[in-house]
Amino acid sequence: MKYILILCLFMLCGCTARLTDFTVVSTKNIDLARGAEFVREDKRVEGTDTKFIFLFIPFGLPDAKEAVDKAIESTPGGVALLDGVLEKEWFWFIFGYEAYRVKGTPLVDPMLLKRK
View 1 (cartoon, one colour):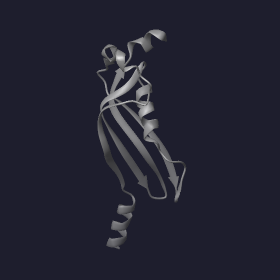
View 2 (view 1 turned 45 degrees about the vertical axis):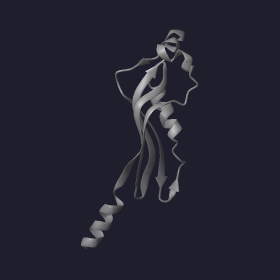
View 3 (view 1 turned 60 degrees about the vertical axis):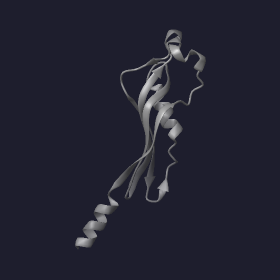
View 4 (view 1 turned 135 degrees about the vertical axis):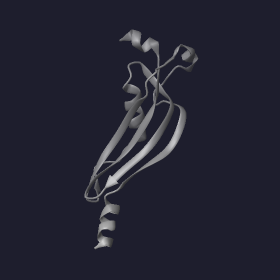
């Protein structure tokens, strides 16, 4: 009985792995010649791309680029993320999920804010 309980607890656990830290990351085309004009925000943002799993069937594969895009686009005028981290998280028993999560400080292009 004790071993069944340990097995059940093991099967209900998930995992988060820190894949990498980064100084600057962007999935956008940015003009680095204007880099001195960019403004660093005070708050950190987060973006996640999650796909679900039922039994052994995944409903797609998560994409780290999508997570970065969501984090950058969560800030108006955002063009990149600074001082961040990329993590992969998963959980599975009968239902589950797999996800990439990125956290970082947004870098904003003031010219993009003026256009909107």
